[in-house]
Image (cartoon, rainbow, N blue to C red; front, top):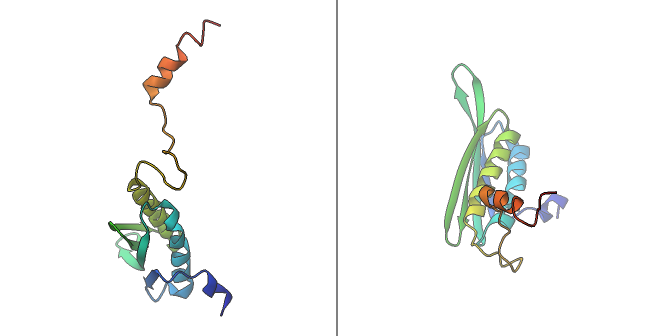
Length: 135
């Protein structure tokens, strides 16, 4: 077994254009393999594609798209950038946000509800309370 076979996840499939190559496909798979920690339900499968798109007057853009299949539905996202690495980073950020927004209100891994920020008006009221005093 090669050393890279240990970290390859069989749930992730990547289809890339010929110009992107195997190294680009490996980068996409590696970047998307860490999405488990943001999902509320188990991830069944992730399929990603990457390719180039010509834009008149600009040049070529890299387009990366992914579909994350969960037990309770699917999450889709797509991103474009000048390089493969930037497009995959944008794609990862989009998927991370969409998966995190689907999480339940209580986090069973931590055993407590996620921390909530106090709204701005509540912070102002608290600052001007009697406990603060005139000093």
